[in-house]
Length: 124
Image 1 (cartoon, one colour):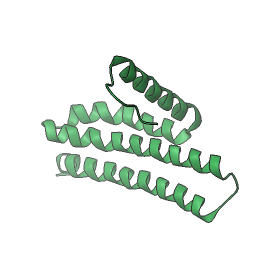
Image 2 (cartoon, helix red, strand yellow):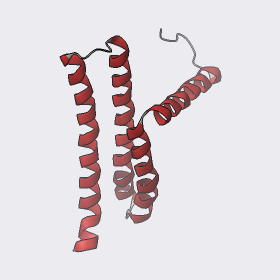
Image 3 (cartoon, helix red, strand yellow):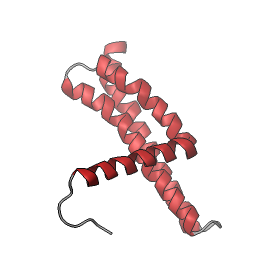
Image 4 (tube, one colour):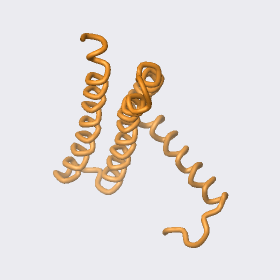
């Protein structure tokens, strides 16, 4: 149920706590999240170091962060699908596959953005 009225410091703190619980659950239960978090830990500092100017730095760090965000959504979809229907169903499989495809598209975006931004400097 949505909160009504003023959202003060207590509600903001609770929202922060719930977000941290979500990160902890993803870290504990999702191998893909741990792998992609490692990617973020490496690529964000590299993007800040290698990017020339604010827009390049933003593009280099945004792409891996979007992958991590999509993985959280994908994991949430998979958890709900597994809770609702533990046996295989075509629609459940399709939902999981589509979530995985969204993460893949963003991984391609990481490769393209890094290649288009840094490729000419390295190979041109």
